[in-house]
Length: 364
Image (cartoon, rainbow, N blue to C red; front, side, top):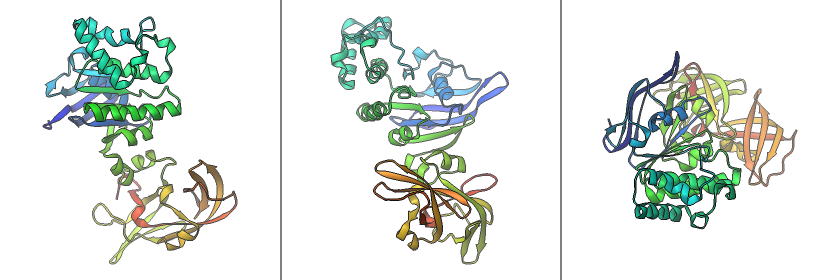
């Protein structure tokens, strides 16, 4: 068990009958850390969060919160505050009533309840809403109240289960910033479940990317983006996702090359994890790392492409091109004038690439 960790999860397993949802998972979360559990639907991220919260009984393993073994403790005894995807507010109560209800049931004095509610309302900027009922609130206001209900408990650990997924795009952006500011203010440990990679990249100190009940990579957003440890992670992070070229790596006394349908390219400058190994592989390159037009001429790997699809996004323009017998997504400046059928030279350097073994899909 790691010292100075807020949460330690050791050899955790959970099965529903014969179906293993989580298997032998280990995870240490530091004091005051903002950890995001990220993955597609069914990967086990919400299940893991519910195990930490005590809403699901684990099949095997142990969970420690602040050094205390809480594996079989009731949720109310774990020292956590939880915010759900649905606001789960009491419609007949005012905002103030929703914030104070749990504290009153726990036996806190009127003065303590009033002080905690006032503090949470001030932090979340919902003081003018205290006398309103949930039906008179917007979606963003309701979610702030739901966060406030966890906040008044004054606990060390907060758990968020996709709290922004029911909101529209602008509200998600606004509340995402508020949650980040909340963490910077409180410095409590926070675990946040989402399938939205933008939320993960902008909020997290570290991201745990999950698949099939396992953590594939646990690292900072920057490391996961720049050095994904497997093809799945590389493909999952980024929008549009990474472009992949199937081919063969060959090694020589002077370096390594990658051969695909489009030709043979040098891999000078690529940082292999260990010595270069010959064999079948995937070469990945992100759309934003591909140069186009006149800039492509200075890149080590160059192709002649034809524009198939143009997607203007305002600040950027996404272009799908055909080159070397396959399709690529390229991110261009939004001011570029480009149309379907145009010829577009593209190029990139090996230092911006990612190589993965064809069989294991592990990073090379």
